[in-house]
Length: 263
Image (cartoon, rainbow, N blue to C red; front, top):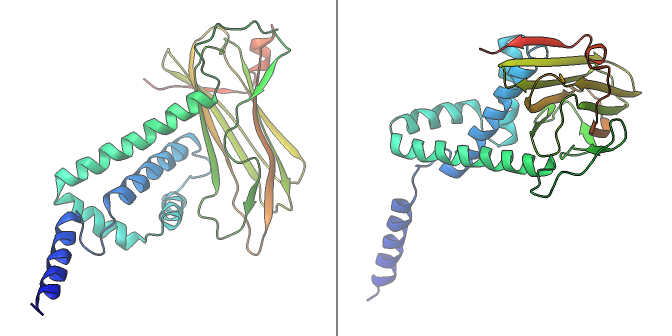
């Protein structure tokens, strides 16, 4: 009878080990899925903001910052990927979970962007506006930040109109480095139109993207990028993304925006 507690304890340990899908030192499935979702977002940001990530070293730095945000090292990630590579069934579950996380973020972005089943209300051409920014409105910057960018994606909803204007605004406080802003939109004809700006100083900075009134857009996306200097403590303040109705000067308003074809 004296051995019974030890037998029960050993059985419990064995049961817990059997329930765990990953051994010690391997990133568990839920954490791995969240990490993979953020890596996908980071890859999208690199693709949309290639000027801020022009080399392999800058892209690697971004990936390492995502690892740091999740509390894992490059070695742990490599070891975990190797283990998942030998356990494809569990890896596929992780991929499905990562996809669910991304789909949830997309749904939240659509909802935050004003998607509604209510009848479309009348808007004046240059009157009404709405702030679509859903992330933090103030960001503290230090050299040890886990991430140096604030990405956003706004999908089409019932309130979109051709020729809409999007103004991304941010004010620097005690900043030493340039603040880089990028905005782009995808059209149903397979083209992407984008614009960007980069500059230093603590004044209010604003970047405007005007949609082509002759095309149908599917989404507007981009990011704010800022890398703090050594010893710096600064802030990105008053961040907003305001949509307004267009005017009858669409071609002139879009002057300077770049167009690429995706397919």
